[in-house]
Image (cartoon, rainbow, N blue to C red; front, side, top):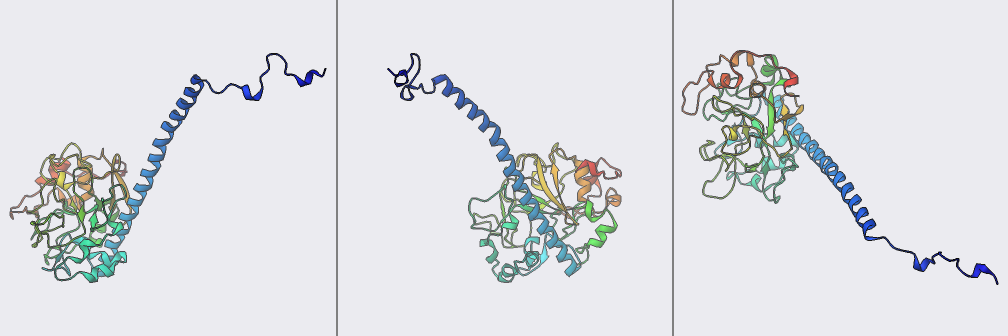
Length: 337
């Protein structure tokens, strides 16, 4: 008899081969879970890196739009400008539209000032802070300025002055370059972190009776904008005592929350400088460094007595010196890069 026709004792036929045991199955599931746990943070980190790159690209485009505006007009666009919107006061966002290839929107601004408020422009929105719907002109970025209607701030309060004030509303890139330098002076930053309300691209016809977030009231004032409600598209310093945290200060209840940059990027916020380059300002940025990045003439800012507050009173140098600790400090790039 041919023994090959019969299986040897102890051997198993394919039909009787054992499957995974419960222990083996649990081990495989555990290994897969561990691998997923290791992979997901890497994927999320890569996505956030891509969003931050997109945010930097947006600010790069907006910064160069402001630079081209300055080249065409001889001055940096202001936080208030004589523009196409009735009653003739437009924010910086409207003024740079022709320089980001959106002259179609700029030309469509009519006497009611409503047209741009329903137009979504992705360049003005940080990818890490997307709106729930693209049915409004959302804005995630702010200009460097202290909003003081009717007067212009001192050398430490940014570069987007009130250009409707003819005598003092014209600041050129040449002036900035000959003082602190365009590469060391902030122009734009994010202002869209937790606790803020996204600001639309709108213009000077903010209507307090409507549940919207247009940028300015009809006279361009800031009175209708309260913490945690409508955040002005501007950033600067406020008060003589700086907060413990400048970037992403946390909540509307904290001092200076309305005045400072914020974002939904972990660890800091993207900012653009007057020469067009961008930097990621970390949460650890010190108040004195931040204040000097805002100043376009640090050598004279500590003794500047030209600043007037909203009531028209001279505040001298107390605000700037409160943030810098007084005196002159040479800015070190390692402090913010």
